[in-house]
Image (cartoon, rainbow, N blue to C red; front, side, top):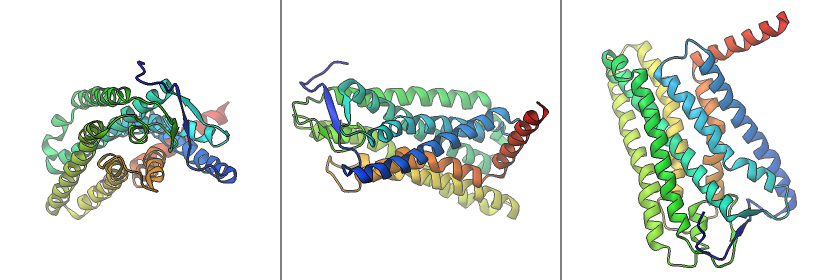
Length: 310
């Protein structure tokens, strides 16, 4: 990566500098990361192994869990390791790589959540055309477009980051590398770059959130024409999706749609959407979805049966 500065490494200040609090950070986020990884991998294995989870909703859920696993892995392992270290150094190239990974998998998560909302809209509002509109071919094309869109978005972030000159100091008041904390260290007027950041990341988050909320309002309004049982099932599914949308987009909008100013809660908001949301998503979809729970039980039963036969 081409460097436009004299800085070859940064020092991450992390969530805290207190030795005792750093141990607490290690324990809490080790548990959250392992839980997020285990929960998402369980959903991935369950959907891949189950014949009953072949609908488009579970096709997208598979990729949401995959994106969540990678998204949390882009920041959590370093946070956990750094909480045991006295000095947390990250090289310039590692920092740029983390910026790319953070935005790539975060954007992928946003695209998949949007596709899941489209799937629910078609299933509830246009049930007769659902098999045609949301065919496996269409779903595959959407996922390919999501990978491509995420890559383009991440490349745009890297181009902005590489244009920032750093001449000191090199202390990042955060636990990970992202454009917002890097803008505060740049030896230049960052107004234009921050404007581009808001128009890129901020616009994607804000516009997507508004579109999703409108789509769910339309879906909920259309449920008046459904039977009581149909309304109950649709409401249960939509509630899970709305919770995920708020958890996913709320922190993203807070971070990327404002000037590069520092608030005391910035770190905790970032922690929530990079580690907390990937931890909560499997719980939301598994605990509120009978089909996923039943598929997990069958998978566990098959595993126990095969082990006992040995």
